[in-house]
Image 1 (cartoon, one colour):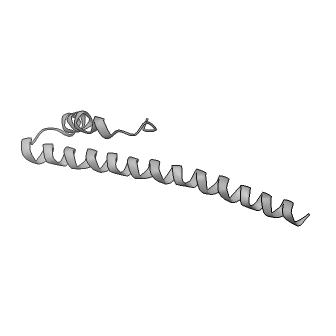
Image 2 (image 1 turned 120 degrees about the vertical axis):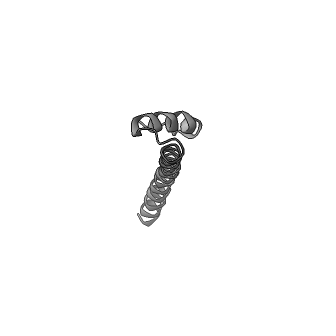
Image 3 (image 1 turned 180 degrees about the horizontal axis):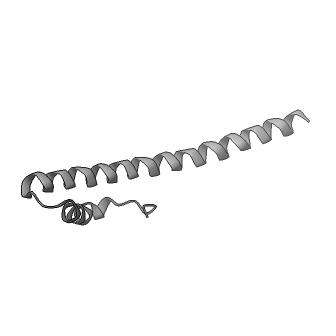
Length: 72
């Protein structure tokens, strides 16, 4: 009976730790993408004095290469 509990506990540990590491990776990529968007938008607004919609559109083009797959 005890070996079954140990096996079950170890299986649960591996499953939970495997899932949590994927979430952390996605969140890091999303943070980097959002930081890129913010930085590029700010640069365009400062340098060109353009409106927010135009600056955001240009920032989306610049940051396209690092866009995570999970981003809507």
